[in-house]
Image (spheres, rainbow, N blue to C red):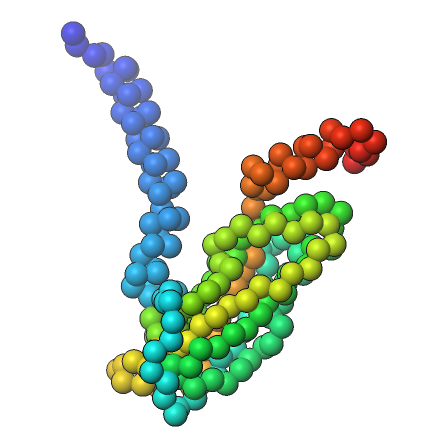
Length: 194
């Protein structure tokens, strides 16, 4: 059975669309994995605990931003701190939902200078996790981290005097549980419809 030219073109086009859609869908998790493994683009490592602590110190600066349209207020509680290299640090970011609706968000992060990304290790962080804030809710989100002592001997990173940890919050769709809870509230007797 021969396929005519028109059918073959349609099948090739459909195959190309499916392939491109699959690549687009897989690109974000693949890029996130790649950055976490290699430290590319200033992405910090993830660790379970700090190790050796040196007498040398380094300044850590904290930055916060929001994607356009994200209604939360988002800021670092402390703007900078000085820690010893290898020492575990703890910083907090504050998020506040000033709206009258439930808003979900997720934060991406980056470390500059890029050479330092492979040596900045997070022990605990709120990044890439869904955060759901009720109307008027304010939360403190911790970031536990350390700077790997290997930074002092690295050819490029050893000249680093300060590291900036930046988080950007993006609004995301409400998780299914939050959507279900919201629908239940709206269906309850006496609930107002906005």
